[in-house]
Amino acid sequence: MDRAGFQEERSFDRVVLKEHIQTGQRIERFTLESQRADGGWEAFYTGTVVGYKRICCFPQVTSRKMRLTIHESRWCPTLSGLGIYLSERGGV
Image (tube, rainbow, N blue to C red):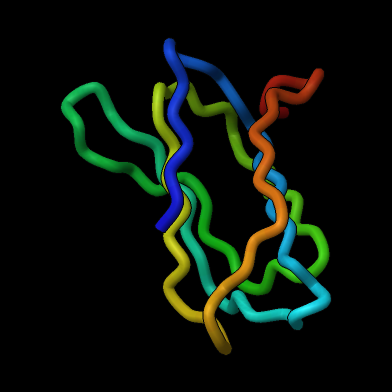
């Protein structure tokens, strides 16, 4: 599990994940979640393989924290990048 936190609430509608592809494609199933005001977590994206680059698109989310949970992998997962963005279209 990996978490990203912000000093204040942020809106985003894209998450870019990259695996360290030189060691092979390993991630097979994952979930992205945002933390609600009550402290609980809410899933907003579920995906399968990541590979070199996976651009996750979803309706706009606003939160102070985001969590990546890898549920299945072929071997120890190795991320080389994680980016969180708000597109110009704002979740459209």
